[in-house]
Amino acid sequence: MTTVLVDDLRDFTDGRPATVARTSAEGVTLLTALRGSRIDELWLDHDLGGDDTIWPVVEVLERAAFEGTPLDVGAVFVHSANPPGAAKVVQALTRWGYPVRISTGSPALGYQG
Image (cartoon, rainbow, N blue to C red; front, side, top):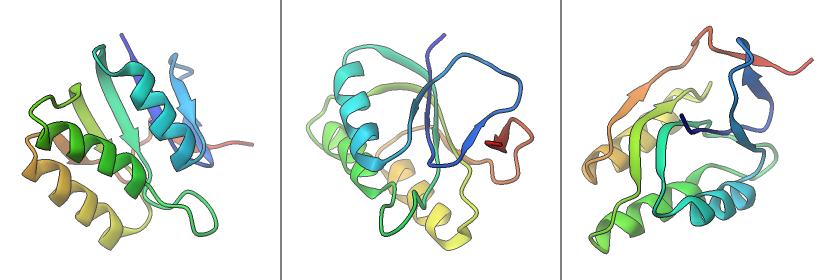
């Protein structure tokens, strides 16, 4: 199972194996590398520290779908503490057919510590 987490601060509390990107640039690089592979779970945080947000990663997903070759993602979980930002991510990715759900407050994630 392939799980990808794009989040500047959180990790999985249950220790599940995941490939982690801490910035949007790392997330873009990771999704580019995984293009053509199955991503079972993609976890996205909206605010990634400073002025960095998840939008460059969302744009990769949108562009792929626009070109007719969406990434093979089983489920996208948006877990941001920014409700308006999370809602916009869900709206954008749902529009392109990705299976998205808001998972803010999920016990699966916790802050590094």
